[in-house]
Amino acid sequence: MLQLTTPIVFRSYSYIVQIEINYGGETMENVTVKINAPDYESKIRHKKIFQEFEGLNCGEYMELTNDHDPIPLYYQFLFEREGQFSWEYVEKGPEQWKVIIGKN
Image (spheres, rainbow, N blue to C red):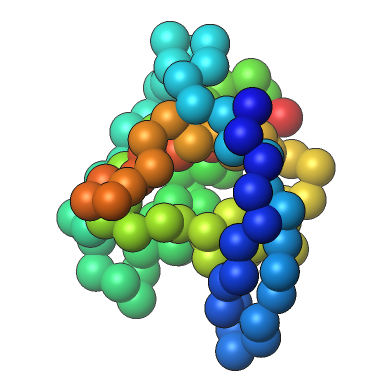
């Protein structure tokens, strides 16, 4: 397990956060939905991701692929769905990021 401290900007505030990043866990075989975020227009992207998340049953996972680190989405999940999800990086840049998001 890798731990790092990363400066981020989210909703015009700067934070220093500690993030736990797991690469390639067992959840890969339980993915039921795959989303390629750049396929969606930016103004509806997060809405679409949350719609797909809501459609998951507890214990199911979705794989999100993006062209940048989706850390702002992670913080939106923390704010709107705290305790209801898991977040696992399986690929981390520089050209593509993949995250497994599970529903608790």
